[in-house]
Amino acid sequence: MPEIIEKVEKLAKEKIARRGIVQEFREFINRGNVVDLSVAFVMGAAFKTVVDSFAGSATQPGILGGLIGAIFGGKQPDFSKKYVSINGSHIELGAFATSAINFILVSLALFVVVKLYNRFRDKDEDSAAQEAVSTNDLLIEIRDELRAQRGGQQ
Image 1 (cartoon, rainbow, N blue to C red):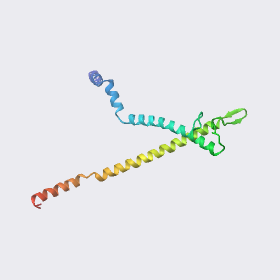
Image 2: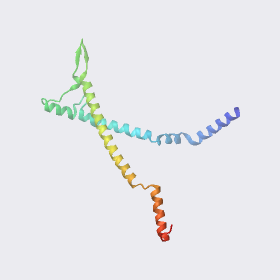
Image 3: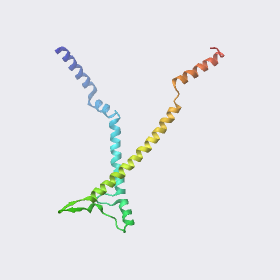
């Protein structure tokens, strides 16, 4: 039994030494899920800045805040300073409202992006499925060509 364990340990050490940490890291990154997740994270962070400029944040009212201010009185509303006071403590509902609006806008925009992506992907898959010829169709075509070359014999 100890001989088997020694052989396994020896093989494991040789294999790990051959592959190296760089090769293992490359395999880990190239699995696909890590790359997809990284791209999604970066795109989400970039997209959030666009939504913040539209919906506004605690310091800037954004385009939406400017439109609301233009419609209801000419001032840009500042929701971050709105609060409800109960027994001397402040519950900041304005900051929550701004965050909720941002969340809803980001969710809606991502929903639209995913729907469009799925629509384009489905079109590509449908066109690929229509263009793909089955093996049986190819074999039938080859058979018919061979028959035509032989003069119609079976």
